[in-house]
Image (cartoon, rainbow, N blue to C red; front, side, top):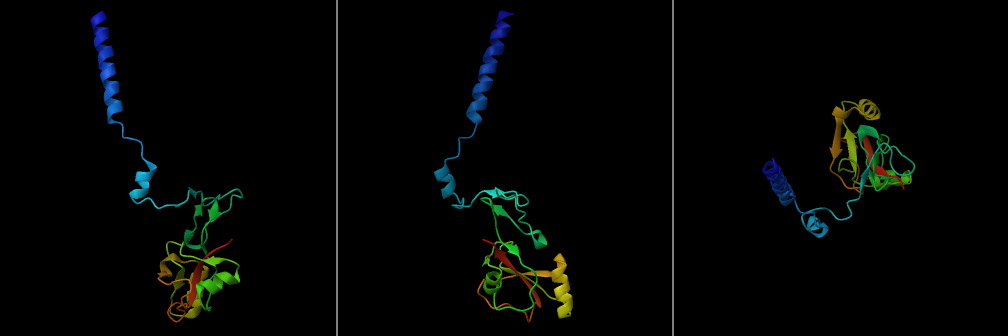
Length: 154
């Protein structure tokens, strides 16, 4: 009986050593940065309860994120004229940015201007197009009669 117990203890010790030997090394933060982790990426939070004020960051097209307790860009209402997204965002005391699914704006095209504005206002997803433009670019209203810009409120 005593030898059976010793065998179990020895097997238990060997198993413990094996488990700890196979455990991965802790991640070195300097190494993680070298391997592609973006610096100052920020900490993502709950976009429905962001920051101390529990703000809802989610807007049209279900776009909206919370980073470091601040809402990032959200889409504006639908515009049918305007010089650029930077100008439209400035009108609402916000800044233009490409944090809405990685783009500055979305456009809605339809057979008529009224239909495009309606689709944009109702946020009909399968009728929108992400626009590959910059904040200062002239808005392409001839191709997309309704456009919604990505703006971040201060």
